[in-house]
Image 1 (cartoon, rainbow, N blue to C red):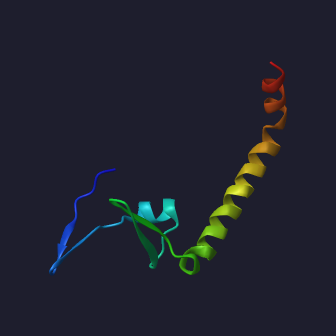
Image 2: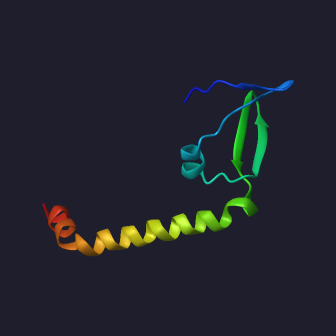
Length: 80
């Protein structure tokens, strides 16, 4: 994904969209590392832990529901 930096006073800012935050689990606090010529932004552990756990629980519930509903179909596909 290519993004353009926005001018913010004497600095430049990167706008992180709501969708990007939801996909990555980034909250209002982030960890920033410089690795070579790359800037790596990761969620701060304390800022995202509850949201991450909630997403994991929702995913697990959806996975379990699908496996239960389509168990016979998955078994037939595996045997084909």
